[in-house]
Image 1 (cartoon, one colour):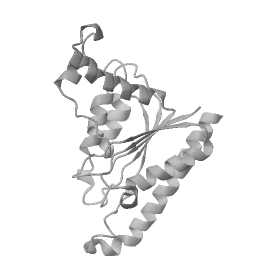
Image 2 (cartoon, rainbow, N blue to C red):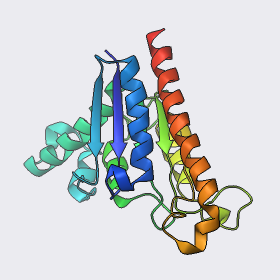
Image 3 (cartoon, rainbow, N blue to C red):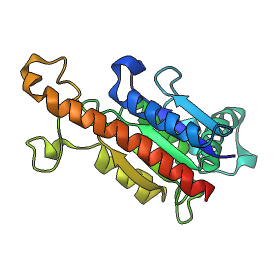
Image 4 (cartoon, rainbow, N blue to C red):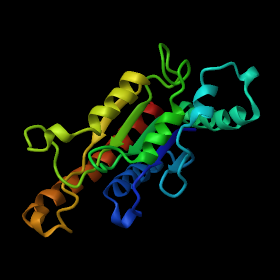
Length: 216
């Protein structure tokens, strides 16, 4: 059976979150193709992971046979997250832009799941797994816009997910999401609505295509 790993990180519920709306559309389209499949859902806002500390980090660079009880407990979580990633046939990650970068909860997931010699390194264990990142943002940071230099979400995630973990990364970018709540952006509401509809359609199409390729 097909397995989808869904990572949500928005601090807002689906009704008030652009990224959650798009990941939900992705999940719906995926489940239509794989009704008997498995969805592993990590909601990092509702159930945040601990940030990587010295105990968990040192456990990743030492022989498990030498681990202290504290290292064993910390590393067990890292192994659990790595196994979820390795089991996944596809991954969808919500990465809303907060203060020009990803939520700290998503960074915590990355720090925990990246294990050198396993999920990262010369032969990453999930290499080639398709990952769709929903990189929502309140404004626009597209090439040619004034805020292009402040785009640290796509650049960072491309480097860590693809360059570091060997994953096959694609982005869906709903932008101008603050237009409906910021009076100064009122004239941009039509562009936001177009971006939103495009993102929802891309999510459904991407999920369907991945599911069909898997079944072929």
